[in-house]
Image 1 (cartoon, rainbow, N blue to C red):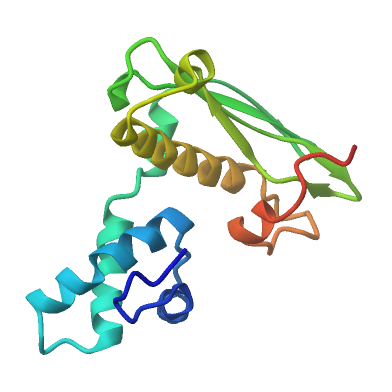
Image 2 (cartoon, helix red, strand yellow; image 1 turned 90 degrees about the vertical axis):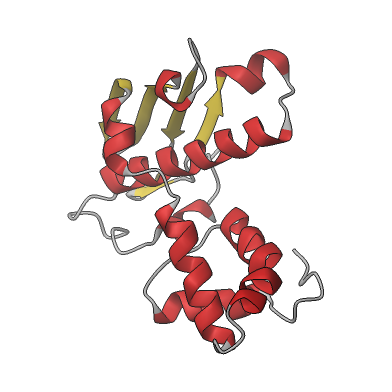
Length: 173
């Protein structure tokens, strides 16, 4: 990810997000970087960090809520050893399509990174850019929802953030 000549870096965004107690995905960082110059022009009196805060608020408000995910669950099977969840994409503008998320057990009470897939890209192997971005946004929301379900309190790894979990391998073998 580049700074795109705005003077803003991913680390700047991480620093502000950490101060706000928020986590920002890579795609959200790319959005913030690409919209930073325009946001700064529209509010020239705002500080560097305030512009970043405003853009973070904007991307957070555009996230898909856990309730939206909950409403479209087709099936789910989750245990302390991972599992899977499948949702319908009808209400997101993809009729008769599905998306799933799953997580494998790595051993020692640790779960692997959450993986997602959808029937659209799996069948056609291609989508237009806008549809791909929308599917990526839904996949991130589904993975975060799944993480919230599998991050059990009685687990020694329960304090791991979504991002820390996603840095793990997907399978132990």
